[in-house]
Length: 324
Image (cartoon, rainbow, N blue to C red):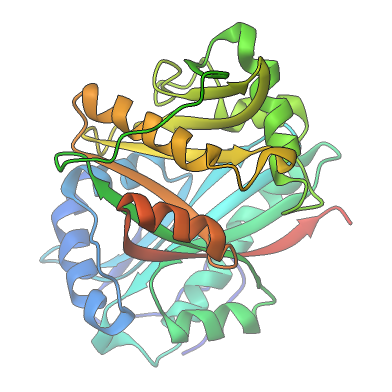
């Protein structure tokens, strides 16, 4: 299998042609994922709507398709321009009976070659990263990424709570008040984020980057009326931010939650979590979801006490290609 420089270095697969993704590929992509899942350890498969979104949002893509429309392999990437950095997220699948021939390695090389020049153009002095993420355990993928110079950035467990069941009730002290997000309280949300996460990371987001990612009024998925700020004697001490993804409208995501370091171990996190999920249930959502870092057992224990249960594990890998 001879590989030539981008864009022509994808391998020849007898009976298949390489071309970009098309709208009509959705059903074949679902079949491809179903075939890959047992070998890759995936427990949750994309719906037709989610695969349609992949096709629509891909900045670059290549798929090996037979005359009958079956897919032997696919790779795609999306670009994300953030306030402080730029990112290219790449993904791929190879049919199990086509593995072991270097197709996955070739696809990854093609995607990198497609992404790097665009990232260099977009960076404008900011760092740029190649990134990918996947659910559950994929040993071959991890080995391939390591050979290409990627490092694990983090791993998170996705936990979910059925909001149709009977939920515990929050008990709030007289001096404790909980209110929804408003533009006037945006500064308090950010201040508690910094106080809560300073013990978890040395790379805290600045105010603009945090607002863009977690409290963006232009983001149709952000739910300010369901997000919560807790104050103790008027002092902001804990917060929760809620999003609802268009592809999963009956599930509300608590995309970030934190308690000020100085106010921990007082039951405030549990009370805020219960207040938040109670509001989600009252709003008619069937399920609440959140992610917790695998190295944060205390937070996970809190979520499990309330009734959240493990759905799947997300691993994120990255490689910096622009900036020091």
